[in-house]
Length: 251
Image 1 (cartoon, rainbow, N blue to C red):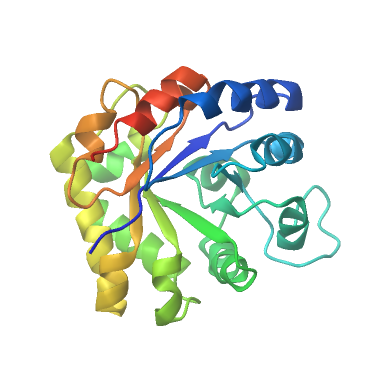
Image 2: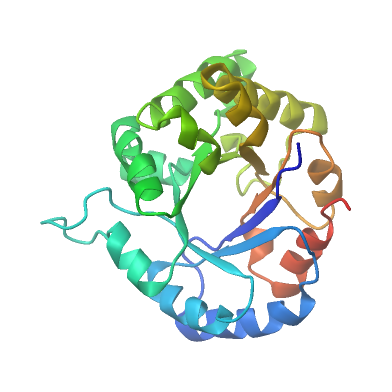
């Protein structure tokens, strides 16, 4: 079964609105990968600028986080209707930095993922183990817990509408990269977890690799049979670098 690859740029806390506009202007002429989805995930303050700059192109725009409630007394938070009103098409949820620094809980993800789906937005769910968990041969237990908890509120017929990013925490921003065998093994395991709920969804769900992806290693990682794209951090801050990663997609 053919799955449409997705390459997403997670800018984290980088780029003003003006810098984001300049990035889009530099990126669009460099994109020529047909049959793939390409997304930018700017900070909240640059979302509108990127949506406007990307208008008329196939470039997608995702937020880096979202609150599960439609509205309410949640100072500092941004809701799904607010994102949709801007023209944003989805959101990253459960990134390890959100879990580590801002106490993102499995309970919150159980609410965020189905809420995004109900609004017609893409949830890009991040999962991954620490270095200590990998060394203790605890990777599968950690991934099983994260995937099952986050997808608990998703109906079987909507499972394939979630995108999942496997990001080993020990490879995020460290320069360390999972070997092809490590990435393939973990992502195949995640696919099997989804397939355990619904076999068809397991075949259709898109699972990305993230963790120090660069133009130098992208081609090898993106060629793996169960890898459907990449969630790119530091290497996505430069338009030429990010375009080179997109161009590394097979076919």
